[in-house]
Structures are given as structure tokens and as C-alpha cells.
Image (cartoon, rainbow, N blue to C red; front, top):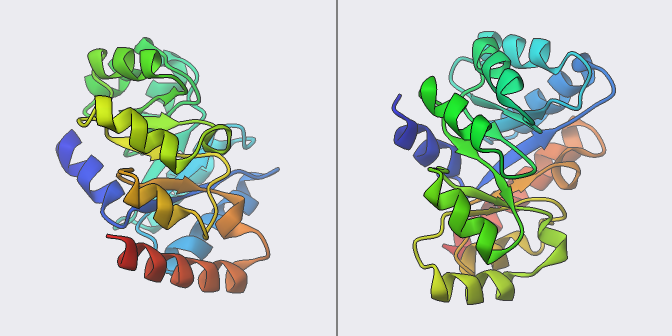
Amino acid sequence: MYRWEIVQAVTEQRVFGIVRAAVPEAALTAAEAVLDAGLRAVEVALTTPRALSAVARLTEQRPDALVGAGTVLDEAAARAAVEAGARFLVSPGLRTDVIRAGHRYGVPVFPGVTTPTEIVRALEEGADAVKIFPASAVSPSWLRDVRAALPQLPAIPTGGVTIDDAPEWIVAGAVACGMGSALTSGGPRAASERVAALLAGLGRAR
């Protein structure tokens, strides 16, 4: 798949899951729960110990899923994640070396930003979309105002997005939302119920 095709696939459902855990086995279980519940894309945070082993196992066991790596802080981590099978990279901040590394291997990168200045710089550096982080520090109305000046902005609010306000972010112009514990806490059954409710709500918000 080309980079733009991966971006399109990751954002098609308007949401992707984010998992982080104390051990890779727990991250794998959480990722499988949201994938089984109907999500097609999931990000494994590199703050998880031996996270790349979870990425590699997921890409092997779930070849149809879009597995990404999150909390990618530098070029070395970006390359290691791609070699483990990550199909997209997400960073909490704007690192041009991560963008360059991802693009070198045909992988889209979503750097974290919090201001219009950072957003413009990220777009100039070639970001495939930008991670609005932490989303809890701003609001859907903030994104709507920013997009009035930057209508070309492909925004992915992450960090504090809930099942209740995810549709508001989409209506405000977000291409997708990244969601972690709001989906994965409580085990596979709870995750399945939350994903079903979320996808129904996002379907009405389109």
C-alpha cells in the first residue's frame, strides 16, 4: 500500500485504538480485543516494554489489521518500528527525523502538535496527518476555529477523547480520533461493547 492508501485505511472508521501496557502480552490482548470488536487499526505505544515484539506478533497474526507504533520519539525508534511491521507511526511531538524516517520506508507519520504554529510546521515537513495532543487540553470548537484558517488540516485528536465526545470531534472536522483506555479498560467484553457504541455514534456523525 502507498502512504496515502494507509492513511485512508487508518482513518476510514474515524477511529483507531491505542494500547499501552506493563508487558507486551497485555498489549497484545488489548489490541486483539479492539480488533475483534470491529476496529481495523490499532497503535501499540512504545512505552510498553518490548512493544516491538507485540507489533511484530500482531502484524503476523493479524495480516489484515493496520498495526501502528506510537510514542515514536526518534529516527532509531521509527526504523525499528517499521522493521517490526508497523504500518504507521505516531509521535507525541513534532520530530522531523521521525517524519523523514517513516517516509523513507513508505510509512505515514502522525506527529503530535498543540498550536497552529506547530500544525503549519508539521504540514510543511510533510506530516500525513497531525495528532492533536493532548486533545483534553483543547476542544472540538477549538479545532473548528483552527480549521477555519487551515481547512486543509487532517487532524487526529488523541489523549482524553471519550466515546461521548468523539462524534463532536468528527463533526468539527477531525479525520479520525485516537482512543486508548476509553476503549480498552475493563477487558475484552467491555471493549467490544464500547467499540460497537462508538462506531454507531461515529456513523451518525458523518
